[in-house]
Length: 317
Image (cartoon, rainbow, N blue to C red; front, side, top):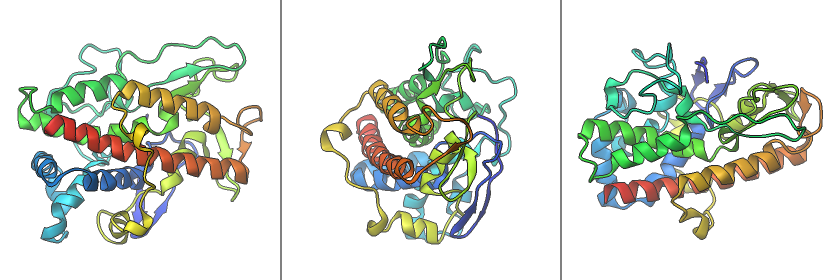
């Protein structure tokens, strides 16, 4: 996933989707997931998480201008965007020479690691409907890193808090990624013999006439890029605009491999459903597709928030 530009003003956003790959859920989606997760953990766990997040080098920037009483909550929410920010907004990070097949691609060394690790954000579990051979996912991927970073975050890992801080901030983001259906699959076809990169290589046109790639369409369902503090943050913490309560049995699932299996199935059913399934690109989306997409996204984000809270609780208790 390559670096993209981010343009934003208070309460509004500008999409940059015509030709560039997309991040998962974009930052408003990731922040909404984190906001709900923060409320779901106990004060004891919250205090431990807050202490780790304060060790992130961007902490002072995150809380600049934020009232003292809200700094911890806001930093937790903003930290969920850091793994995307290092693809271009934070100086000192690079993807040059960084590949999933490199030795040490899945290393967990903390903020000394200045690779942006774009391949940590997805696991392209392929499928095909026209008989095109499916290739294996990268050996280091979203699943391997959720597992590695969760082990590192554990209070019993023996790792220094600086590394555990890195693990927590990555997990705030990657758990959200795992629930974006197009981060768990890729369609292999005669048009894309090496996969469509989770929908990045096919264009769609929304019912409003906005053209983007399929992946960007799904990422944008919660909004775009917002300013660090203000109306957007107030909306994230407003109970009237929150995510729905997830199914309790599904929310209790702790195996990230099963999260990704769920996401892939939803991608095949909804993201690659009609008219994408059998139409011709650019695919003209209809109201049914868009309604199903939003419903699926909200359910997935609600699950992500609950499961993120459970993961943090288990690691820090």
